[in-house]
Length: 258
Ligand SMILES: Nc1ncnc2c1ncn2[C@@H]1O[C@H](COP(=O)(O)OP(=O)(O)OP(=O)(O)O)[C@@H](O)[C@H]1O
Image 1: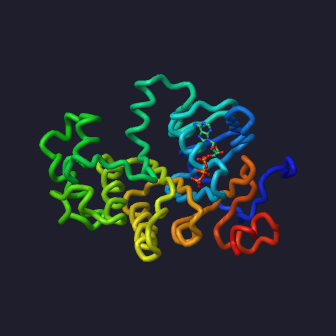
Image 2: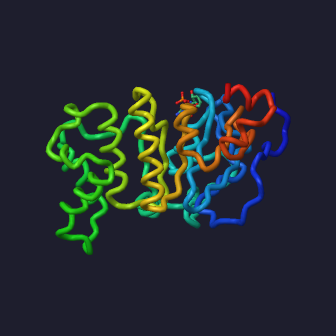
């Protein structure tokens, strides 16, 4: 059991940036399984925050709580100024247009072409002011991920890395303010994983998105993170830049960096 204390902070003081997402003292249990216990973190505008944790530590549960797919037992989550737990179905749906989510499974529709997969969010969140621009929006999103030539292909014809890129293109087609990446490099070979990590950085720079990236791939963490929060036994155990955490002497932190 960890001592009941504030997270180890390796971060040096910087000027305060706008908070776009806060998780405050959140707890979430399934029966006796206390997954999140008084967990807190803050995402600032324009930053990539990686939540690093072992398998089964609660990273996916955290993401699901953030987007309102799971209710929290205690605490509060605020996204772009709105308290997630207080939102009704329609308000949550509206908020989700500003929060892109890249599923671990990519969640592409196998029976649809790449074009149709990308058109799907546009049709779901119909935007009258964008009428007639759908095709150029699809092309722009595909260009952002370097896969314009796949527009008429089926997902089954694509490699794992290409499917991940198309899933990201679908997230970008209505440019989100926040992107939540669930294990973006899992199941990919090291070279493709590196390319996806670099793409995450490119997207951050081009769209000035703020992102939470959950991962246990240390190369992905090193390449994408402006800041890392360590999820251990349900709590934010330590936070800081990759290099700062890497230099900490704490044995629990060291386990991640060997
Ligand atoms: N809907 C659910 N009902 C019951 N238990 C759940 C549910 N969702 C998650 N859990 C439990 O919560 C714990 C954390 O699961 P979670 O999927 O968040 O881990 P993770 O850190 O994302 O792991 P991985 O890196 O392996 O994906 C696990 O013990 C899991 O069994």
